[in-house]
Length: 295
Ligand code: NAD
Image (cartoon, rainbow, N blue to C red; front, side, top):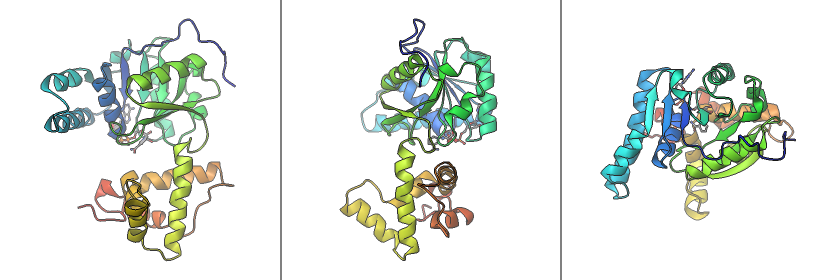
């Protein structure tokens, strides 16, 4: 479906300067990952406290690495030096790749993507880190959709190896090639997937969560289920703990998007414990109470 089978001559194959828009959980993590692998990164937000937090998070990861003897003072300084925080779009004008990681709101993302295009060169590749919004829908906010695709990192970015690269219907092969190269340079493993609700990982993860919810409705105990999946089956954590990590708000939102997009496969469950916890504002680790108490 993609336009053009050959790589365009102007294709960017080596990303030497990146920009991340949004310095939150994901933007901060992506900026750190680019910086630690040696690619300078502009980290742009609309709020100075967010930039301060993004930098502090990078420093925290590096300090932990130092405590374990994996990072020395030189590496720490070089990595932090590679991150340039800014509130100003003019700082992104020379970057090869922009990764949008602002709040999961289609209107805000559409505005940010349109603004981005006005501040970068024609060849600059633009990606969105959205978890749930259709890439084809977001592509409508840019005038050159061939240089746009999804680049979906997982939380926490510095520990999760996978990056889903989502091809929109107009994304060019050269754009995909540049983003695959950038992902590898960041030390991550890319997979290229088509645009659909949940992309690949969440289409597997959410039916698993739905199965877990149905078990609880049938009377299972979440601690017992976690114990089976973690201690006996051998996964790093069980579904209740994983939902606490993901966040009940994020899980609720993503399951709504998937139920709307592929109702024949994923339907909303009546009295879903995830919805019940979400409505009770038990969001998980982010507010210290979800299935478990994290205080
Ligand atoms: P967050 O709320 O932690 O951070 C969002 C940041 O965007 C904030 O710092 C905010 O100030 C900034 N922002 C808002 N408007 C902006 C603008 N116009 N320009 C620049 N910055 C702006 O959110 P997050 O959890 O980091 O999520 C960001 C994106 O990553 C979302 O699309 C989300 O779906 C996706 N994502 C999140 C996770 C996760 O587990 N948190 C995982 C994968 C993908």
